Amino acid sequence: MYPKEYIQFLAHFHGNRDYFECHEILEEYWKENDIKNKNSIWVGLILLAVSTYHHRRDNFTGAKRTLEKAITILKKEPSCLIKLGLDPQLLPSILNERLSIITNHQRYTSFDLPIVDPALLQLGRSYCEDNGFVWGADSDLRNKPLIDRHILRDRTSVIHERKESLKLRKGNV
Image 1 (cartoon, rainbow, N blue to C red):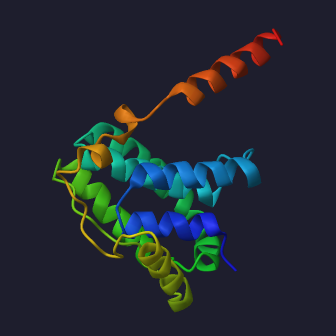
Image 2: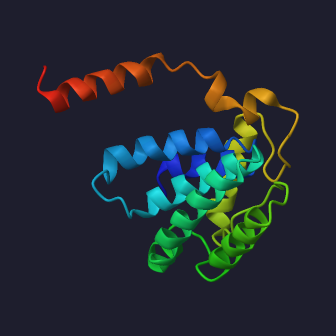
């Protein structure tokens, strides 16, 4: 019923709070299924994860900018939110509250998305359990590899992909 990548996204969002991984998982899914649609529900969720990642690192400017984009996309898609097992009335309220927190430069705190489908909730919890983390746990703010993942990751494949893309754009294939 739900894409496995979406379940993984939710599990990382609510379990180990690895927002960078949330972004990676859904970006890959979006690229395979809806890449031409910059207003896709998947893009909205990706931006939400990116914003949350920035907020946790006290990058309030990046967090605000990406959350505003996420809110714009997600509010246009209430029927998609319903199909994804999320409460379309409660989610905007939560995101607006997060935006206020970010705008006022208040520290990050963990939060949950309003999942209304009990089956989806169970799928997410099972994924967490199977992968050694706990649904609903607070983010470990001392875990530098989690907090600074974008700095610490191996970028070799990203750099290679960008060079190949540049070659294609310039016609140097």
